[in-house]
Image 1 (cartoon, rainbow over the protein chains, first blue to last red):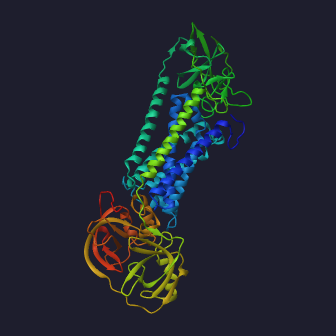
Image 2: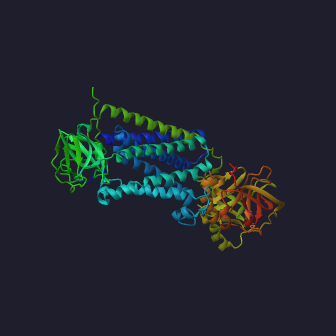
Length: 343
Length: 262
């Protein structure tokens, strides 16, 4: 958590994370370049750079895209999620080198503007195999640029988490464009079943992990609550919630997290104000509900971040009747103090 | 014993043992995937051809200038041996722009002896010269020489891929196919002559400079056919080591198959 905006709020884990990213990228480039120089010495430096950085960016994007569902399925992957934006920006830089070198190589020094040439030098838009694949890569790079350039809490706060999240969900559109860019471009000419195979496996892995995590989420949404006469909802027994942890329920159209701590129960809206992390998968640490994604904290009894922080979430009324928890489906204003229920 | 309820917070140094183990496992697998990817993408590349572009070593070439169908210099190699060097401009342009100044000064250059300093491009017996400055062209003999007439080789049907010779013969690797198609289209629309690279087994030549039916240069009209397997038919002539084919563009047949010129 931070009060003001610095370029990077460094800590031990972020530094380790970035060192691993740098090491992985360097290792990839070294192996690719050495193999190319040994096995394909006639190749040009430009071609080698375009291929090395393009293939690196594609592989990094696959790794990035499996982190989300893996963390949803197993919280032990959360350290990988924590600094994913640095991995995203690094991937964008690799894609940028690929894109800039490709535009310089194939589209500059001609009789039209290079960007205009990207869109017009092959006009077979009606054909699949002859489709101008460069356009797909260019659009994907544009999306990645907007994502990378707003990959900071300053933009998250100023664009609002909802718009920011919407913008960053465009990574899936970029991924689809990149897959088509590769299959309609490089793979039309470089047809090794091994390179095509690794991309197909990557696509299947990403798709299946997303489906499995979506199935898990839909089970949470499917948890039925029983409506009492006064309109409150009977959700579960107090003993079903572990200490310092929560259980998530869908109340109306919203997900709510009911936490148990120090022999008390409190309910707050499940969505963290920072990046929309699932607070109900968090833990009570130092008396605060702590978001599993980036450690943003809220007091359970009022949904407010402890001073000097200012984030607030909606709170809900609870009551306990014969060991069963009942929740008022009408939430209070964000940050409203609600007396915790003793259990 | 109850399992420890681990919880990771990025800004807290301590990390639970299980979480640490899972994270390490993920990092090793991710690095392994990168290594495997580097190996597969590095190893399974089609080998580049041994074409050459002397971009940082200019060469002076002297010979008889020949304007049609595309600018060339006819170089004397021996008593009765000549070779035509195809002239090209800098970037994605033909040679004409660079020849304008000297043409204005000296008039018609056809058949006259020129010396040009440029960068050589060569592959498989063909030589091309990139001119990057009109000032590097000089008239070394203003006497007009009679040059040999083209040899008529008859009508031929050849399948292959239309490329821009500048990239194909050395500037880019690969300088053909789908990946390079946009670049080839820009080169040819900028004045670089289109060349058909043959993939027919018994073709009379590996390469054909393409012109229209009257023997005039073609550029923009041929763009839709570049970089894809096609079948062309036309009257073939031979001149100074280059074959030219006079074609009717509307009769080019696109072939629904993978190009095998490489």
